[in-house]
Length: 371
Image (tube, rainbow, N blue to C red; front, side, top):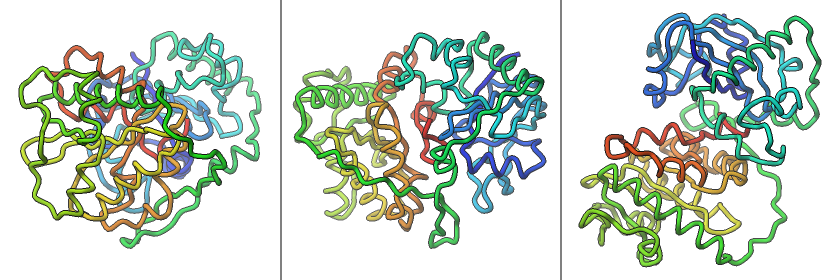
């Protein structure tokens, strides 16, 4: 038996609570991770935004695909599903916050870290990540104890605010949760040398990962020389000098300024905007511009930034202005990847045998996140 994390946003938690609680759903891109889960394995459930462990679900059958609405009333994206049996399921005010000492000091990925750290969040950046056996057994015992001798963890006013995001209806009559970011009083400062070095390094790592996966790499002309100082292509012709794309001038001008593109033939496989300054808005705007100019272009886009900027990035992606794109809400096609995740992926020894689908294990979706 093994233990895996199962993430619930407050919205999907509400939907699960209203269901008969026999099905847990995931995005189709997680098929690779789902294939490793066996009958009898346990899903330890974590509520994002509220940072609480809420229950344990035992897997009772192998995964299947079903798009009947459960977790959203229309166009439910959680179509990869397991039949499950609740072993422990707690009300929210009994769910155990990860920052409680009893939890924080005993999990291998949080112990000995300050509670201000964000390094531990890699464990809860996506569903179906496998727990260390010690952590899985500890959380199972901790949550089971809550059913026997419960300790109250009332929701604070801040928790209540996080648990309910405003929703809007798109032009396709689909309900989408949006965020209204607080005013950011931090002035946008000129780019610092250290920021430049970090972002160029990450561009180089993304270029190297893409090359090892046999994609052609596009680097904007203004950045190319600096990126090539930190990354040396192995294959001749890996770096494109011109984009092999047939779009109008406005689209091409937008595309050619995106920080890193992975290209196969005449198709963009992945697009990455790497945070360069204290403002992450310009990169998100460029991705939104691309989706608006080419609504039929099915492209997977990513904003890459330090982990401590994650919540800000995900809030910006879910602004109302990005919800009404003709191609659909930006949050459905643009995800967050941390610098740490890029560095972790770059260390993978078998990249040559992988496809871009591996990025789903390192990406964080706006509606599922906010650790």
